[in-house]
Image 1 (spheres, rainbow, N blue to C red):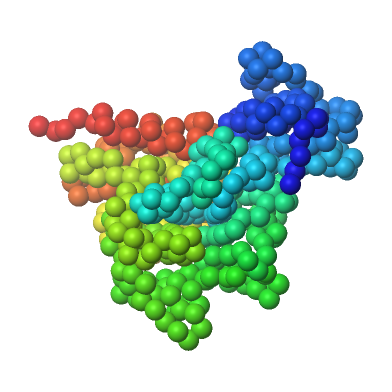
Image 2 (image 1 turned 90 degrees about the vertical axis):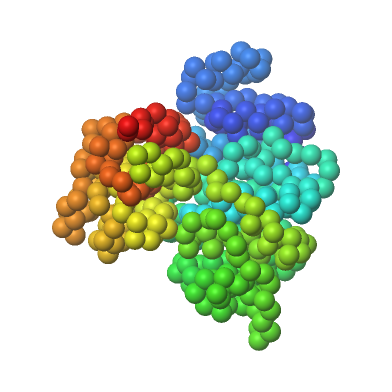
Length: 448
């Protein structure tokens, strides 16, 4: 158990996580200093909280801990210096996880982790089990601590897991791993390593839920993995949970059991994975199959994830702003079957390739038009051009892209915002981008 009383702690980054970590550490008796690259934010915070700022210098070895917010790269020179001096580097996630009373359920993955977390939380609430939803999905875990026994459902990003060396969830789940955040992690191998941190401290008493259909996860050397592994699949009859004819089965070696039937309004095959993960996790937490089945029926899609906004003049508009990776956008496109699509693509650069997305677009005959915008526009155009895909327009910015989509859409079309990129070239978050899309759609005039 980590002790912070009378320890010197530097909180690095003053977003939600950093602010929450600071307030918790003060309660725990630590002597806290803060640092943020944005000097005005740091000065305002220090004035409000009557605390002291610290500019990273050679004196950094005097700290006992550095608590990093998710947006802070461990490659920063002063963090590497602190590490070499024996200063403990931990994440806000690890800080909070060390202090909870209850079950820690950690869910990570390139795509699907937010929906899976939300679905698990919904099922637990439906089953009247005490639960907290936090982490990368919204509120920091350090702001959600309670002395009562709760199930903590925590979305864990690679940024958080990178510095969570003592993290030990009772249940860990990895939805999938495909190239992402290479701008931060430098290589795919380092990104994978960060994700796998989620179960590195697990024991035989713990549980690990993995996607058997994901090549990276299927290639893991399971002989050296300590926790009990439960596989999920929508393709194969695995040792774990799988689907046949909308029925979910659980197999333990040769014994096969029909657990429940799926009835849901969630679009797309990718949501079948999310449902299987939620079933596996909730059964481990003691929820009965019939309760899970009823809960899934009442679950609504989360905002910014294939969110139906409105049908205007015979055109359906969907907000999938949370699709910040090419693979997530592929899932979104495939969710609409053969419905004619106008696809909005682009945003800030995470150094992820668009080749798989372009190949998927090439195979589908229902994509009428692709409207490309943002910092990644030239990369997307280059990738499409290699495959001689020509049904695209390049817009000067996001809002021009929206107008072009409306002007080119006809009755029966679907306009899909599924950018395959982060939002930081023009917005503070994917939420802001999605909200702007929804505002625009709601302002479109009905034709007489």
